[in-house]
Image (tube, rainbow, N blue to C red; front, side):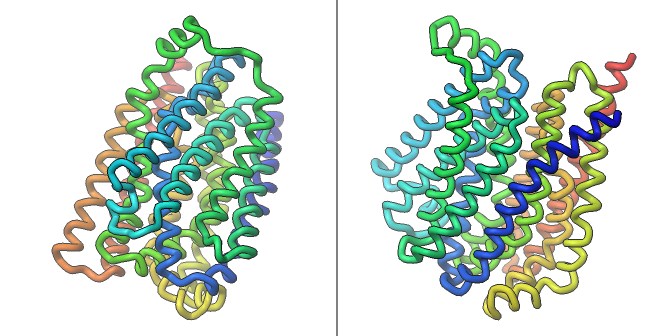
Length: 418
């Protein structure tokens, strides 16, 4: 048991070092960026990041999720290559669709951008999908140092370009940062892969073995990502770019500790659970509870400080204009705190083969959020009332998810033991 605990701490520490430095760079750059760009520009940038989060999460049809649990390195290598091909093809088709029709994710949200931004968006989506694919490979190989180095490179490159070359804008810096991260992990993959190519037999094997991922999991993952970004997108649509900019800045700042802790705890949980779910189920159950406990403890001091001082801290760090973002954060703290606790174990239902349960939860949450914003629009609610309503709805659903995951895993473990 001591060795298992030591391994958990070792993996977590490797990830934590790189992630902490990466988040520090983002945090240090934010006060300068907030004085270089106004809320409206930040609104467009935040919408861009949201679109990438939605599409890069499912651009490889969720096949990257199978990489850590593939039985052989040969199969995992084929999956990585297939994910890259699919992501490149779909990103290119998205760009062609815009050139042919003039319709993009930005235009659907009534956000006007130059045509070159759509090209950058397609590149950002592809690089984001590549990073996710390579990250699952590194998790399989337990090369957590590479993941940390890639995150650090992404943050340093992004912040460096955004600060040093403001004429290029926030989005260009983000694309360069994603490229740097993908390149580091891609080189590592190339060095550690098995030399295997696509044959008719290999393709048939992959289709038979993993067809459930694009058919079932990709839709659920897309809805999950869409639901996470739905508040920002609906705020942009109903309240405009400036309000979205204030919301986006608040989400960006509160997201730093969330990303730092959830990425570390989540990657360790998934990499361990994927390998031993069917052989050491009680260990996974213990790890599940341990990860949740750590998230609760680590997040509490940060959220307690924000609950009291958020508006003043935002005004001090980013300028008086951004005090509004701190007020938004205060309203959203409950849902963000439960998100911090839930996200590290968010893959539990997938690992247990409960895709249907996950899909129903994701769909119900999205529907409720859309209904909430529709009611707010028709009732002409102010933005603070809307955010309070979202905090209540979001918190309720995260609580339900934790209960469902705990019960499903507990039932699985007791079934194994019998």
